[in-house]
Image (cartoon, rainbow, N blue to C red; front, side, top):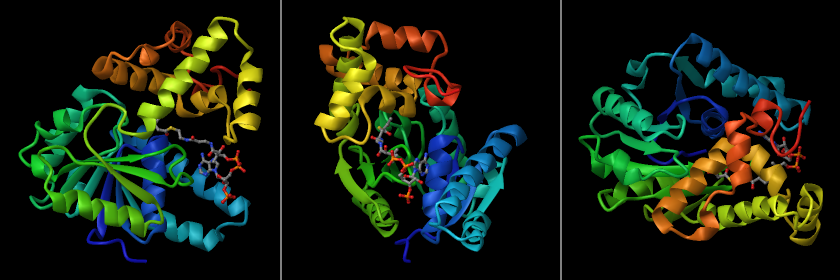
Amino acid sequence: MSSGSFSRVGVVGLGTMGAGIAEVLARGGVEVVGIEVDRQALDRGRGNLETSTGRAVKRGKLTEEGKQEILDRIALSTEFAALAECDLVIEAVPERLDLKRRVFEELDRVCRDDAVLATNTSSLSVTDIAVTTNRPAKIVGVHFFNPAPVMKLVEVIGTVLTEDGAAGRVANLVKSLGKTPVSIGDRAGFVANRLLFGYLNQAAGMLESGHATRDDIDAAMKAGGGLPMGPFTLMDLIGLDTCLEVLEAIYRESRDRRHAPSPLLRELVTAGLLGRKTGHGFYSYD
Ligand code: CAA
């Protein structure tokens, strides 16, 4: 399978999204360099990759040999210097602007001058990240959806500073991986989250006001809306902390009341009930 003009791609951060993106790239025949901050995080990242590819083997979608080939295509390191030969690096660290800016400053230092640098941010300004580097024309957003190995959509975001070639090459890579790219300008929530999160937030508001129960709202949207999951199951999958961050970012930019985060969502996040990843959110996963 051709991966466009990128043959070696780095992924910084191997949490749920980063590991999923690394897997998608490796499945598409791309050589991947996966980076984590320290040994412990790298082991967790390796575990994420093992679990996801192992699940495909269990379901008969992948042979044990195929799984090993995918994993062998992903070199793991704790050193940014390992990214020196990458044509493209995708950053997938937590949604904090200061952290992302630090990562991009470092990427700008270690990567080749012609390398394209991409952020998987779902809510921060790509322009804010681009201007911290000396190569703003080569900075794009590439927004995968959770779970990355399954979801077809990838939003490709160009800023007013991005050169056409960079976003176009990334969109071609996305297509070669069997995904559907859509091109979008740099606005909070891009397209999918801007439409989706008003709905998710309203569901939380409905629950809070006693309009209907969690289970009935989920059942209504699953059975009546033709969706694969109801809003509470989906928020638990996304992570309630991420939901809150996305809502806050969209609300900051739009001042649209539909995006003013529901107090219930905020309360759950403060309590550390973040959804599937902590075992408790709107539902419990013991
Ligand atoms: N990682 C890898 N693969 C997974 C997976 C995961 N976490 N979860 C499910 N899958 C795979 C399964 O292996 C299975 O693959 P095959 O068909 O090849 O066998 C397939 O997905 C279907 O899985 P299941 O039968 O177990 O479960 P399901 O039919 O209920 O599907 C789902 C699970 C794909 C998650 C589906 O419920 C779904 O599409 N839910 C909506 C997800 C969604 O809307 N995501 C977007 C969130 S918004 C976002 O991500 C943006 C942001 O910035 C926050």
